[in-house]
Length: 375
Image (cartoon, rainbow, N blue to C red; front, side, top):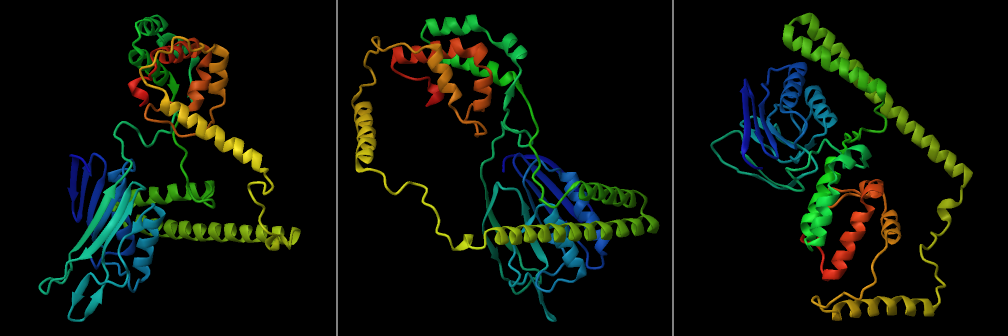
């Protein structure tokens, strides 16, 4: 999780922000209304922000085993905010003389969180059964901003000002490929055009839903500031209108997909009975297979026998046309490697960097090794 970055506490809410995670502890009183419970949750999420994965836990006084209107509304709100429930609805977390219930809940949001286990520490003394939830964080990198998509385009004017060709050529002349590659990568990264990642919402969540959601949150904030019954009634009406719109859009989208399936079935009623076509042609001659595997095994044996310290002075030099064609064959819309350089950046920067790349590759051939940054 990293070191503690910030701590925030108010009545019934505690927020602890770590370097890679946010933990929210919350208590919703049994007498709290549905609107107040929703307001407490949304206010805590707004205070926490949305840049890091979140663990949300506490006594919500909303039964998962026998949900009422308040519990259903709370669970739907958290689901809309992207949270998933960890608890099993059959294991009680509160035991008293008059029965048991599942009200102490744990939610999480973020693909980086992996829930490994959840244990209930049974004790005869306490009514609330302590819950121990184990989790791991995966794929977190402090050097990458999650709200930024991988850069795909470059500013040629900015690149021409940042690219120090003389210094790179000097490093290559001295045989220092690592320093030359470092200067080249730095110039490329600093001249990229930053773009925000596109938010992935549900397919039926259109502009009308977004506008009404924004209006609902506005009424919520106004009621929280003024604490008047009029604002509470406005927020309640707006919230109910927003929920009805969501149900309507969800139903319309399902009906649209159903009609599309019916139209496809009517157009080709026997498609489901047709056998699937093989991705590989079944009648490939055996000679083709022999040539294919022979080429693979011969290439592997030749590369394994070649000593790493052998002299490559007699190797044919690469031309700029060959390097250009190799870069153009790289597939687009692929995730970058550790250097954060996408194939689109490499391709768009070729007019200014093709000579440098050619010299770098030829120097690698001459030395018989590649830079350490590529290992």
